[in-house]
Image 1 (cartoon, rainbow, N blue to C red):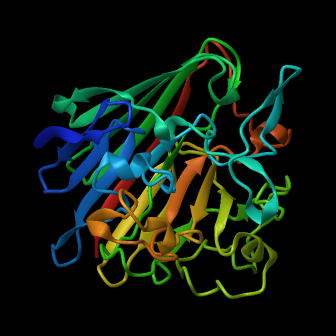
Image 2: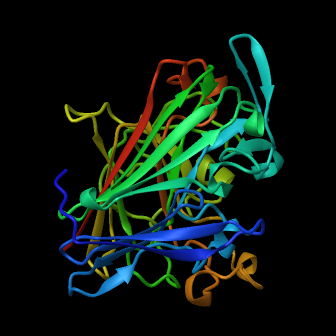
Length: 367
């Protein structure tokens, strides 16, 4: 990935309740593409890119200050979530013969589970920032102590954002541990490529390079099956409008209230990455490609976005907008949900002496 510094800056992003100050950092490339990130939650706050006519708009749901990101109604907008992104059944797992109990902070379908690292996961931590202006990048570091949120081992994690002059934004998470643990760090950005965040994303066109997905039970926990997408509404092997099949009677859609599932990715190429997804907004012409080194990608269609959650002080989104149902989508590359409890899934265990590395590359264009 070639990179040439065009502009780099930082500013305050507000104070947390304990008096600590959060910051926001700006990366700009030679094409005028701009990315804003914060040390609170190692969060991707904004991504400004041009449409086919050159109009530059922000593509991300989020907040105008750290208050919103620290608030109780934040649905993980742009956060780096961990230790374990996605769901763990009943908040329990066994590692090396020892049982661990985690917080159960989510209950889809009335079935309790552990979600996105727990009550105070990585998304609610202030990370140490190391700006790298010469690389048009910034690295955030967080040390999670042994026992934090119920997880074993002291874990050191570095998350790096880098913007280059090919309009490519990378997010890389690297972690090491001093004791065996489980790990699945996930980037949780909410995208609306139109730039108009009051509009639905159901007219966006999605391609997922996946011929299998993970069916779930009513609690959105994978059953262990890797099911074919053929002849189902889960088939995005060809570019398909997101809303085209939402109303079909299909168990997976009924359980999740729409799309909120993990698709199985092909093996990475020689560069260690695979094309996971391609999204296009026909109105603006904006296109986003997503490449990764992970085994799965969770596509979430904003089924739980609710304007009632964005009322009151510090709760409204950017420019005071109350985000409506299905006005953004998430594409979260990851290890499989509930992998610690599913022996047939790729392992999410990290041992001392090993290095966890999760790479994502977003490529933006307009046509």
